[in-house]
Length: 371
Image (cartoon, rainbow, N blue to C red; front, side):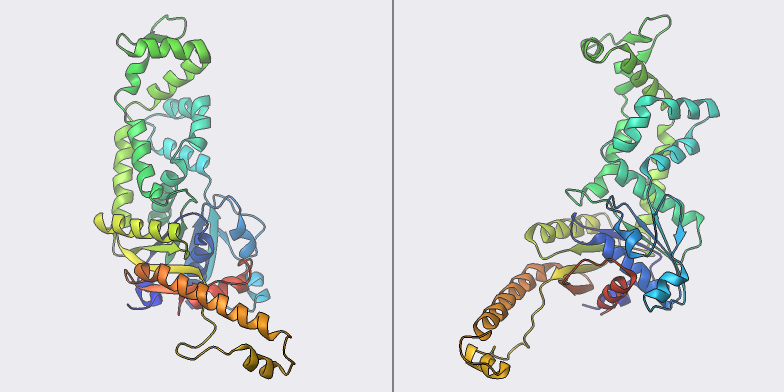
């Protein structure tokens, strides 16, 4: 297959996906840095609770607004980019607020939703919020900004497919026709609600017993406030889907050599392909590299002892054992990632002695990704 660098050359949006803990954040930042070094205006958007990206880029912190990596940070790392590199960290709550502001039919409806205590909790904690807001923010950046490349580091999830499924789950929740029937406004009722006349009445009474009228009021007000806004959310989600399916967008699958990470990446590949999403390439990260040339026999203890200039029983036995162990691990990792590498243009990044924590380390990773 062709190298990864060639496959990414014409892309304007890159979405890094994969299981949690495989190095997506570092790969996303390195891909962005590579394009900035070549002369592009690049933005890397992360959803990384560890905030490692800011440290790696020489920034004190990242927020919901784009921050440019300063020239002095590049100079300190011995880098001289021809372009510009920006970074930001998604603020899920603020992005929800922006989305509500955009779709609310009136200022009164907007303020009513934003003040609702249940909304304030759910907008940050609702399952799927990170993933849904990541795609929403990506669409905003891709349509309202003039970046040559935007790289999205997707949320760390237990299952990578959650990134694709979460927006639909959020829309299903907001558009559930049964929800307004469970709790609906009622004139003059002490709780502010009319108990549903069907099966929902028992549910509402039980909720009231355990949670109190105040929470029920917030829940009813939350559901009523979103009434009529669903179509706007749905239309926006369709526009986001169209953006992700464009030829100028590319999904980059990131996996380590573990069985779970490779299995998730292959599932992601099949799912993306079935939905017609453009798969730009694959990154096999943290793969044990073979230290001995293929086809050349490894030295025995006697040969190693002679090379080290030491007597029998010195470092040679331990060194021979370490070489054998590394080669076994390298063979295992190579076999594990082989099915994934056959699916798309790819890059293989060897296991590094430590985490990537600065611009110099990201530049070295970028070189690996470019082959």
